[in-house]
Length: 130
Image (cartoon, rainbow, N blue to C red; front, side, top):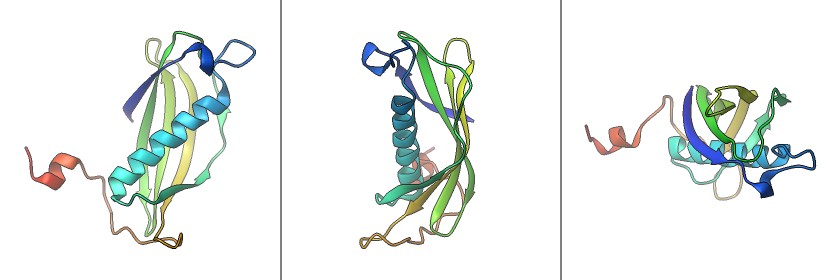
């Protein structure tokens, strides 16, 4: 799994228990997965279709640095399926793991759109850089 983004847990990210609010974490995950899918598929209208079971394994507290990891599971005709793990950067302890997130590319009318991708591509490969 490649960890792309780090977040610093701040006071505004906390729930009444003083730990990271689950909704905030899901917002960060959804945004990160969307950005990853849009960059991979090169289609700006790519949206979240499905997230599998969400199980908070541990929590994070103010001052913790967390990192969000994404892995491609498969490419569909109009979709990309990913998995995600969020962990504490220092302790490496998993906070949440989501086995399956499906992102779907849409055309200008909001209908599923074939993206034509079959494998992970990196910007340097698209530009022919070394």
